[in-house]
Image: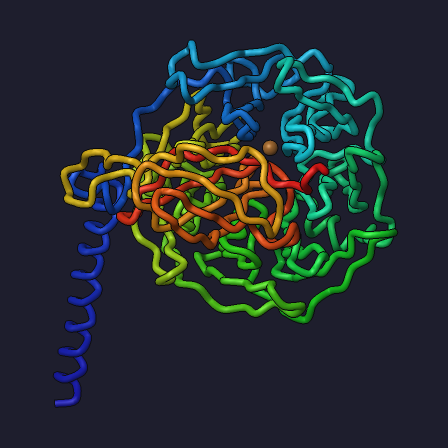
Length: 511
Ligand SMILES: [Cu+2]
């Protein structure tokens, strides 16, 4: 009797496993299938694959809405000492929309750091790749500036204190640019942080010059954010957390909190003021709140598709879009491991929903970046990737909010911002007009993306009052919440459809 019961139980378990397995295969197939128009308003849609003049390993939205890209030569080979690309999304995606320009600096900016300087709109490019005796992948101490008015990259005429390959660059509340980490050569790192102040020049933070902080465990594009209290919060791949002091000589404190192990090529982003979503190994995901000195850590919903080399992008409505990558690091050898499916995380419900399915797997050296029209540029992958394709191309992702909710698959009519200042200051209200009743105003800091991270990306919901067709909108309260620089301002209508953004500069008012 017991034996019969046991064998029945075994058969039952076997049946569940078999049915589950078949259902699982179906689930995978479904996940890789193209999205039908009836689902565009739920999962969004990818445009077709469009050629790019280079592999856009690093992309940044400029203060005029164009997109700077660099990484390879025109053949897709490592080496951005030759050319870079400036794309104007308003001209479409054909060859006429691109300006391929020479890089005359002699610096190979492959795997460098880049960020827009808030006060000038220039792009600061730090470090990069150096070839020594015919061998690539040594690091460069070079500093260069891209000037959007002249279209020229020029040397700063000096070098950094340390050469850096894979450094992070980020804007602080006081308008200084913080440079973290990077590698010196194959065995040594550059833990000492450097700061660029556009008025007073360069300095270092010797008090934060520690290997444990931005060295061997955290040299590869370190994850760090300006906190609402003035320090910088850093989270390394082991799951350790630090408070970094960035005034004076600098300093740091290791925090007692810890999260599960991550990886340099798993995304973490600040999706709301002081709130970080961090994807760790195995799809384990955390919500880390740094609005108080000791971070409050909660597990977020498990992402079944946490992928190495994916990029997380905060959308115009504050949801988080994750695209690209593969389940095994940089391995495109199996259909199941290549994740062309993208995902959307909703902070309001803590749920992951399936997004659209891309035409191409985009692994190491892929990027994603929010554009002025609320779409997401997803592109690249390659040039140094072992088992992955070299993608001299991109796919534009159209998020669900751009479609009519009736399942017709048609684009919704979008509200428009009609009049708005191009400069705002903290804690002051500004007025604007819009073409349709508006339900939300959102600010997204225009980022610079490479290697699974987007420097400076932030999302801030703005309070407002309505008076007829005039809206009085409150700017963010202070630069610790919203560091100075260029932001997309979106007006979102009452159906949730965002306008094309106005690019607005947030800084101290010039008296
Ligand atoms: Cu790289």
